[in-house]
Amino acid sequence: MWRSILLGLIACFFSLLAMTYSPVGWKMNDTESAAILLPALGAIAFAFGAPVVMFWRHRLPFILVIVAALVSVVLPVGNSVPLILLGSLLGRRRGPAVWWTTALVGLTSTRVVIADALAQPRGASMIKGGLAPPGADPAESVPAHPGLVVAFIVVGLGVAIGLGLLMRARREAADAAGAVSEQRATSDRLGEEAARRQERERIAREVHDAMGHRLSLLNLHAGAMEANAHDDPRMAESARLVRTSAAAAMEDLRSLLAVLRDPTAADTADLPLAKLAEVVRESFGAGQPLSSSIFISDPERADPTLARAVYRIVQELLTNAARHAQGEQLFLTVEGGPTSGVVIDARNRYRGGWSKAREPGSSRGLTGITERAELLGGSMSYGLDEGGTVFRVRVELPWRERAV
Image 1 (cartoon, rainbow, N blue to C red):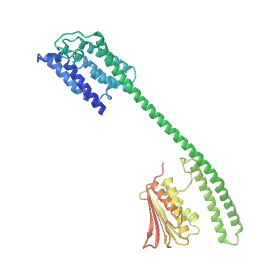
Image 2 (image 1 turned 45 degrees about the horizontal axis):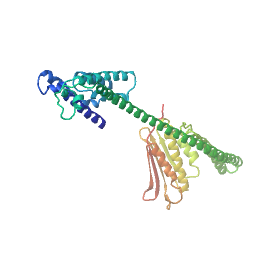
Image 3 (image 1 turned 90 degrees about the horizontal axis):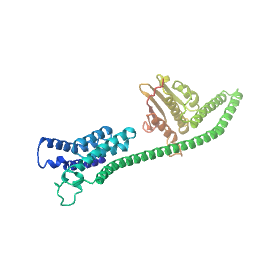
Image 4 (image 1 turned 30 degrees about the vertical axis):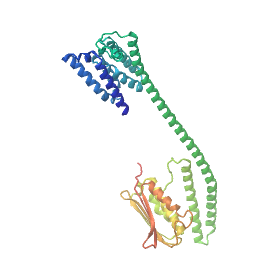
């Protein structure tokens, strides 16, 4: 903005100066004929329109340069405007058309400078009038030195072309520096990602070797206990639950390790909402008094991400209840559908003395539930209810449709 204003003011000043030191400007002192007034008014209009033209120099660069160059031959406005526009063109464009336009400006500028040098008297020439010694008579007819004429032509074109090429070089250098900076940032990100991938691979191997081995042994021993507990149905049922839980834990471990190795990979674990009641009954409700009500309309339409979130939140709520309210009845409600979303409500009698600061990490499960809900655009609230006798957790999740 400020550069366009500055260039416009410079172009306006030199255009008015060229009109003043021209045969038209000189003759205006002696006559007011239409033959003189029309070119003068045209030159003034062009001079005051130059600042406006500067704001369009990047939108119509070739047209403006060519028009300004041709106008400078017809009207006594000098060659400042086409030279400024030429410099701006060279600063942003490349190709043969640019140099053909430069040649046109060079020809018209040469024509303008030679015509100004040949104009008589001294006051009708910007070159001779501007370089006249103090006290010189403006009505005196004097010749212009050829070297001075050549110098004006060369300097004018040289400044316009040089500044244009300099601006182009600076712009290209800035673009190159930006590209190098972007490539460096990309390289840094790739390096960090490679380091994280290596660390994830190392963690995945350690978890697989340690937890996988222990879960396999647990499954094996639980199967042996189930086989040997013929006379104790309760022991056999407990051993069966331990065995099935260990097998499910192995499947979850494999799924988590796959995510750990490749976080962008699709989650292949089958956790449909339609099986949530079965999962609660068989896997998470063991050993905990539980009263559950699960009703979800059109569960097969739920996005796997939503289904997994509901599954994991319910798992965490049951685990927290077993940890902090062991033996207390837990009332779990899961309901919803495509039109209302999914609401999870869990309540149990408050035993007293429980707080977030009771034991380190005791609120980590609630924090994880909050993060899962917020990632899906939902919310979670928890606290004491019914006069401080009931601890309640409520989670609301918006519905997400399964991709077709």
